[in-house]
Length: 285
Length: 139
Picture 1 (cartoon, helix red, strand yellow):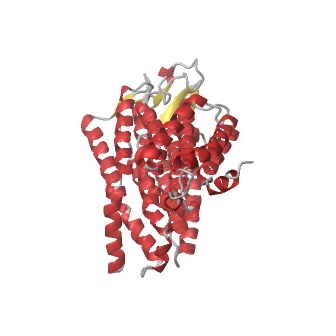
Picture 2 (tube, one colour; picture 1 turned 60 degrees about the vertical axis):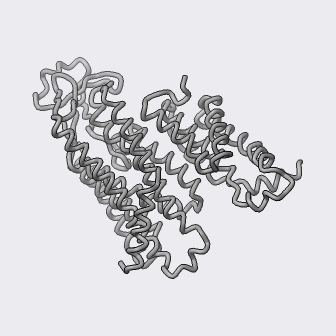
Picture 3 (cartoon, helix red, strand yellow; picture 1 turned 90 degrees about the vertical axis):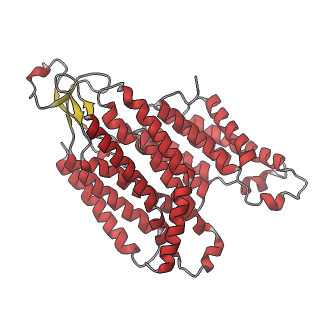
């Protein structure tokens, strides 16, 4: 990066950190995490903590729309830096927000390790010491990167900051607030926010659960499924989902930032998305 | 037809409402029933789109005209609100009063604090209600 690009990136980073949306999102995420602590259903804390990051992601996207929306001002066409370099600087300027999310995720992960972990499953297949795996934690950081890239791409395509922000708010809420819509056998490979564990049907409701291997985490028949299910957390599936997210980030950046690298980025993004989806299918429990 | 109708129609930014309507249309085709949280977010998005339709880039230029800002705003609302409610009923078919209140609060805030903040209010409220696990309509 040239000095001018670095300088613009520094300015954009300062503006991004001063934008109220990510901080409001962080407060709402904290409220959501606090609200799920009652554990109204088995595994609510484990799954809900991932979904609770949604308001932060939305806030980051709104901040990104605000930054890339400055490209819509006509005077920018006459600026000494070309659009590609300005776009690159704005993307780099969004990285401190990703760093904030990384710190948030690391803090929660450390706090959970110190406190012993989370409850998951029903008796007799229950643990009180469940921990999110590294690929699951990395997913939230990558989603923050995607929030920056998608905000940039949305305002580039829609050309209106307000319209882009409203549509992104709805889209992020769908992806995270109603994550269960995308938690089916096939849709979960394409979901933005992938929530684990996966439910694997292991027996009809009348099965004696003590006949299952003692190492299995189980959940009984109830409101959400009419069978005994084994709860499986698959780090491999989460890791390939992370690859899928990297592909989506590449695609969104290619849409938002013009330049010579656009076509290779589109190709690389499409390949990563395809590989991520196919290999999630292969390793899915 | 009133002389203001067509110029006002053309000056309104329909993109937010069109975008939200597309989202809601796809969801209506996909879902058999709408979860309460999703209805809340849909209401917030529609209300925000109504408020966003009040954005007038030429407001400063038109401030010297005999037609006041309040009248221009009322005319815009007279055109946007029926479309928004038609979309709402055709897709989510949620509580109309709840949507009306969200939109009214957003419009009121936009008059004092600007359209972006007015559009943010309904969205932030429904996300707050979701995060705090309370009914977005406060019932």
